[in-house]
Image (cartoon, rainbow, N blue to C red; front, side, top):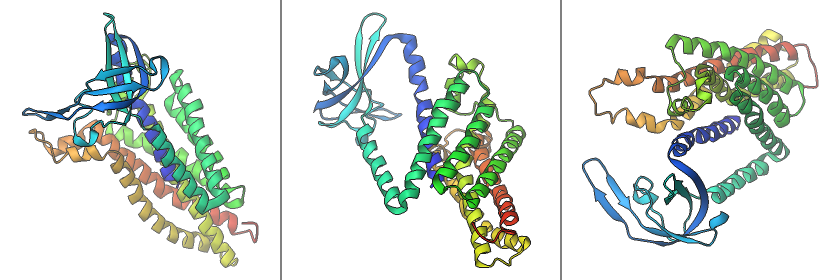
Length: 374
């Protein structure tokens, strides 16, 4: 569950980063950009243009503005062919889209469709998710959702503003991760010995993840500028002073945190149940039996973590076999943009392996001398 939560958080910030280029370059050539919701009231048949490189699908549509100062007005727009590059992206009558009104320095006004309007349907998807969580987990699920909201709030209202104001990205991401670990675990699982063990195990492993990440980044000489978002960040005023390597390490820590929660809570619960089943188990026996279960957990979650990163960057991996240049495949894997994804996976997997014996040892030490209240 927590892995999905942090993947969702990661997606939120990835989307925010992807908007940076359009904002940066739009400001250089325009006086003002305004954005509106609009309903498509007419949509023409497709006109297909082909050349040696690609196929372009061109449409002409008429929209009625639904919001803002232009509400009720109608305009004819020819969407950018890149927006309607395939049949599945066609704009149909009745669709609600996001349109941009661009005022150029010359005074000319241009209208364009920049995206489908998705927020209402995203709301329905989110409602289905919340409903299923609450239905199957009841109070625990509600508190888990509260923990997710707190996690997003900490990142959005504490970590990001501090980085934007010139703070060290690694320090603030680490601080945010530690706070999130404490708050979200206690909210989701309540105050108990098991939860406290999971919290301690998570905090220790998060601190170790800094060293593991720094070592792997240093060994591979990553600069943090290997992806498109980092490139555009450098074009902003913030980018001149931003520590991209620290930002990369901070992102690795936050991305790993979700998996750590799953591992530490599970290991704490396993050792606690072993103690309840047989209070005569010594600390060594509890550790050995708990570690046996932990090995199975590692096997499954390493695969989960790797697939999560691969899935998030799947188009990138599709590009590798389509490489038509004379560059060898090893050169692609050596490139920083691909190396970053590989190192992210390796850091997360390494920290995951460390979390199991650490949490199991803490739990065995605590439960080995307790007879109740576990």
